[in-house]
Length: 140
Image (cartoon, rainbow, N blue to C red; front, top):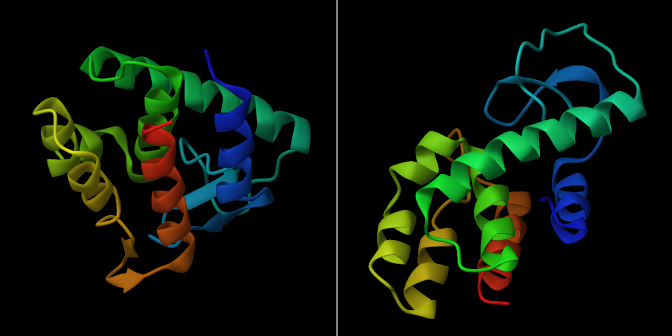
């Protein structure tokens, strides 16, 4: 069950683009960060963009829940945001997940979130802000 907090933050982080574009990693994207079957030249409505976002969040949330590491909605929100942005495979194979599974300290987990601020080798302020929010949300 997607929280309103997560939906609002993902809209903020992703921004709304009704025409397909290449994201910071060079992947065709539309709406609020939707990447499945997107081609440059595609156009959608704001209503459909939100529907896609809700579907995408539900898909990622289901995968994150299966990891069995979230104890509350705040932790789920943080990890869903992370996986939504970077891909579930990156979360699943990350040191972040390993540290969480091992019961790492707040500072260790926060440090792992904040390592993921680069796109194509460039440090991005938007990713820094997102990771800061995710690390904070994880401990709420």
